[in-house]
Structures are given as structure tokens and as C-alpha cells.
Image (cartoon, rainbow, N blue to C red; front, side, top):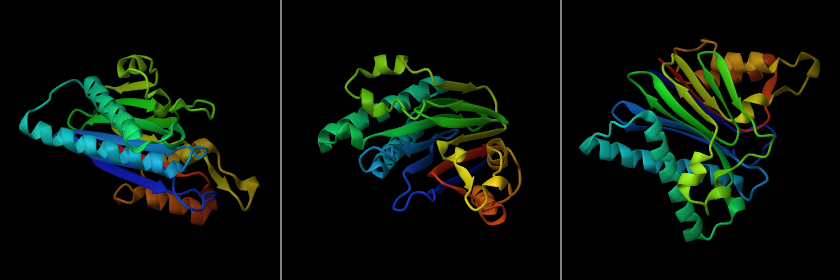
Length: 244
């Protein structure tokens, strides 16, 4: 199984990339992958996406160590809930511990648990995001008003989790990608008449097999778009692509 990823600041942002990503094992045959997009209108939005990512990485490491001593063979959907619950509780604790405002914790989250032997996956999108499953695009778009996890930290986890609708289950995949909505923002800023179709760019990044032999596959493709087609990503971008 090959993993490719890219985290890139958009050319309309000058100081920090507000997206983040992680790819961590939680057992000998399972991994958690996730992309985050901090809200530009939030306060210090880069902090929120990084905080969620760092907390999720900590949770993944703890699950991996626990699995080493006592195997947890729960179904992927239950593993997904376990991870999200731990993240929910940790972010709520840190909000109180650090005296953070809700606006300091606004970040979307697209999270997946992957079985690396059976090529299954369970995914949940909290806010906006794009999944590409063997060429099929599944977009979750909330009209620029994402329902951030941070809005619900005062609620019981179970009631909030039951209200989530943006799940996606995969019985088997050969090619799986998750992306923040920055993937929709490639622009030809020098010649609008030569603007590439949005779907062509998405297919090139998430379906096309060019450069698959290189670990920096996605970096090469983005560089090609920039240098050969004059297309730059204007918003921040985080992508993880998995090929069997």
C-alpha cells in the first residue's frame, strides 16, 4: 500500500498554511488518516487545525500502543467512533484548560480509518471535504458555513455523534483520497481564458497514475500544474492519497 500526501499554502495566504494532515497507525493493520482546514474567519485559524491534528496523532499513538499489548478487533465503524469520541473529549478538555474561545477552535475534519489488509475504510466528514474512491467523487459541502465540531463541545458526545450524516463506508478500495476544499481553488491567474476545468484538475491529482513511483507524487503534480499550466492553488490544500 502506497501513501502520498501534500500540505501546501495557497497563494492567497501570506503567513501560514491553515490546513493540516496526519497519517498514523492505530494497530498492526489499521491506520487513521485525516485532513483539517482551519476557518479563515476564526481567530488564529492555523492554531485550530494543527491542534486537532496533534491531538488526533496522540490518540492514534495511544491506540497503537494499547493494541500492541491487547488486540482490539472491533469493526472499523466502532473504531471510527472511538477515535472521534477521544478527539471530542480531548478538544473539550483543552478548551477549558486553556480558556479558549470557540472561534479559536474552528476547523473542519475529514477522518478515515483504513484496514490495510482488507482495503476497507470508514470515513466521517465534519464540515467540508472531498473523498475520491476509485474515481468516484463524494463531496461534502456546507455552503461556506461548516458545522464545526467546536460548536458542539458543550453537548453530550453521543447525541452529537448520532446527529452526524456525513459518513462514507468502503468495503474495498484500490485508490482512495481525502482532500480539503482547497482542491477546488486552482486558478490560472495569468490567463483566465486558459483556465482548466475543475474536474480535470481533480482527476489529475486523485485519479491519474502519473508519477506513482515517486513518494512525492502529489508535489510533482502540483508543480506541473504551476510550472507548465500556470495553475496555482489559491486556498490552502491538504491531500492524502492511498493506493493498494
